[in-house]
Length: 321
Image (cartoon, rainbow, N blue to C red; front, side, top):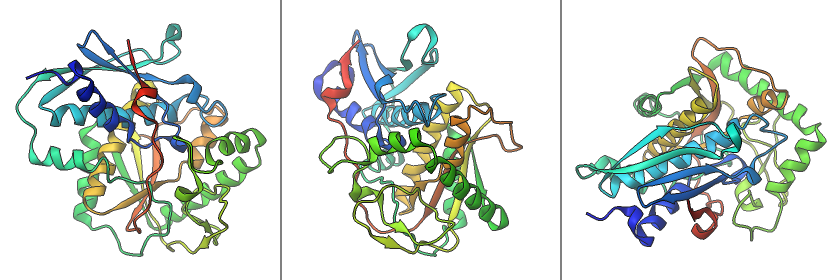
């Protein structure tokens, strides 16, 4: 069987799947290169890094980790086993290389793997109000299992702890909004008329919340729409045992596997990472908590159908290595 790295069609299929991953403000901070048709490389795109909100590169690594998971899954359903190996963090000797993946012959993918792959194109970040229906315990268990498969943990935050987390999000949002550099950086990726192939155009930003402890990020929504969100958002946190570049890349892969499993169950998701952004902006190190280092704060539930954010075309992100 011909390797998918050997043909243009095969490469396009892999990179299209990888590029459908979620990323911070839809910056899509990745590039891909093929080395001697033997392995495909994942690079960070430094021009798409957020120097104000993400000075450590944590969000960039998580975004690229999500793309890496999609790439691995696309190789698997093509009939190959993806073998990846650790590489230096960006910045080491000027390198942008984050991961390399080599296809190895393997048995055909399972039906479950094909279903997960099909969910790549259906997954959306949903910033609209969710219903009050609770995600069943069985589905929550599947989401946690998906995260563990990638070497991370999923912590459910509810009751008083959930309220406290929402308060922390609201305070972080207020402090971020007072930073002129942060506001300018956010505007760069959330403005425009929707004709760009990146960023968050108004049609995916959702309505402006009319409450105080709101479960969405406050963008500069151009359409002026407001809405009341669910009273008790369901929150989960993806954590890792460490807090370095390899941990962030692992968190991104765990996040994406969880989001695809959620998509298969009709569960929507959006992100509430303002406290983590504020921590990174202040260059504070995160003390290890009992359940690990928090890397992503995720709101889950049942929301309406929403449009997909734009994606960069394959020729922009694929080059020879």
